[in-house]
Length: 583
Image (tube, rainbow, N blue to C red; front, side, top):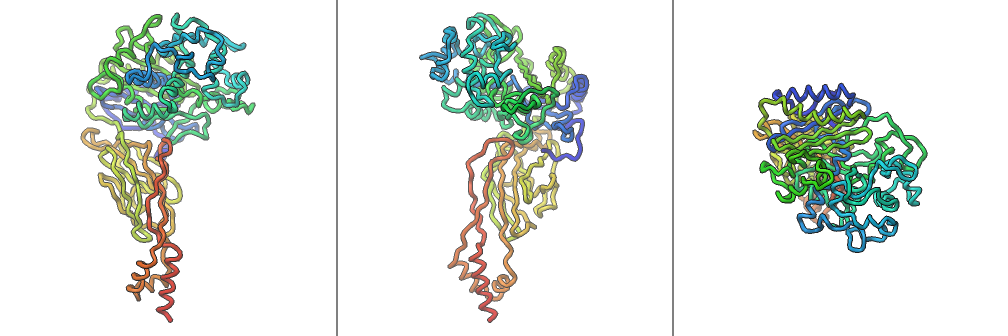
């Protein structure tokens, strides 16, 4: 959650030269009754616009922020396509290689045992990328009007004798068992299942889970932190994830028999991964586009030859390449995504403009999709002078956050800096820090706990380029939670602070207890004795535990920072020394 007392119409860094974009987004949202939107635009490789509009939560109390995560639905397909093309470039797979069968990538009996339609053995990786694999979701199956099993997960579980909610592999087995609707390569038909199968190909070839490999080899090299696979239920949403508005309901994919909201258990999002399961911030979607745009402004993940192959389509559909829709001369690439409660659109242009628009609501009419695809164009057409700053937050967080007590009321925290210009150290008592800084806002720090700027119940205790900070006025015996936020503020950002909020290092620690009055008296009256005893009876050390990074990321390896805290036996020895003095 973000530190804001009241919902604002817009958040993020305002840019007067792009006020026309603000107005265009507000008009679009008003026309289509969209609760919240996140919009990011780059120009010549620089993020010049990152703004949130409306509300991020169902209660309409939390304003949408540029760092909010949202479901991007089928914009997940370009992510998977880039991953496949990276494996092609690295020589780990080939586009014309068969997917199934003895020599195919997915040769396991788990998949092949259910195949009855022999045409399935002819499907290639390229055909799955280009939606020519042979499945047509508009053709019915098992008395359903659709053949896409994401539409009837309970039936799939029953038919395949699997538990609910069904796993992605079970969905693949189901479509394999039902056969194809046309000969592979003979026609185009948009297929979610084709991309789900590509996710399985990635796992088989790399020996790693789909998301893990994509994070390590695509997202992290592109500087992307604000991207994760989503979850089915509202209770399991990630930190900074928006909430999704939909009036439609369906029987729960968990098989409980209850009707639930489509965004929260109606859809089985956790089984959509490679075709529709990703969450992104709008600004990190723009990072992804810039990492494959072929422009010299930022390094690309793929070679020029591989990018050209990815943007090229074979017959029978020249407008859908390999994971991207393309125009006639392939100068512009784009993709849209749609699920109940969410809609998304990303566009890469040859003119140096790139944008991402992500919503937590949607409308059904075709006109809505036309307007969504035009919205970014409306924004860029109205700009006569582009900003020269770059609002991308740091790509690398600080790390190795640790604490050393300086007595019962003070502590020194230290860390290894990331690649920002500065860090914000936030401290809170009793609970982890979850009120977060906002881009464009500076926060005054004070070393005395509680005297600096407040983010909810948390206090900003340090801000600047250093890698250490001393905090005072802590309470003996109390537990504190620290969070370190990397940020960038320089002429390159127009002196606007922009914060990296995903994967922040966090630390919990307990301050030493205050020694008793008699122990303090003994130390004052007979210091040489106390000192000698301290040397001969070294106390055991307690530990401060660095928890997993905050921000929706996966848990990192737990690390222990040695924090020497006097033990009960130590204080009892001091008490005995004081007692001897009073005899």
